[in-house]
Image (cartoon, rainbow, N blue to C red):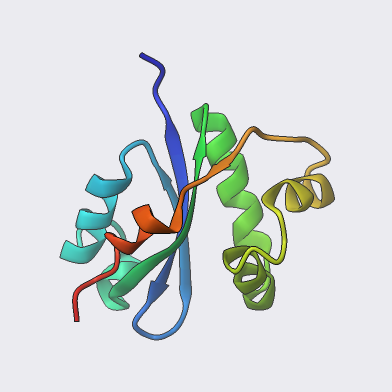
Amino acid sequence: MHKKFFVYILECENQSYYCGYTNDLEKRWQKHLSGKASKYTRAFKPKKISASWELDTKSQAMSLEAIIKTLSRKQKEKLINGEIAIDQQLKNFRHKTINIKKLSKKILIKYQQPK
């Protein structure tokens, strides 16, 4: 079985965005909620996963995460809203293409923190 990797963007309680990668999105989300995933999300609790992408390799996930972290808040919001395609960002920043599958909004809904 081929292992998949995910890059994700969280919206935090202070309205900031946190970007990371993992090979198990559900487990990582639970760690963020419990404050055990990162110092940042321990301080600024995540509200929801705003966007995520499935990739074929860890290297691709790390590259995409690095690219997203270079984006401005406005660019991240456009990415989340589908106004900018991830492949367009990759070409602009790294001049290469990565095979990325956007996860459906239905899947993301289950990752919203209960109020």
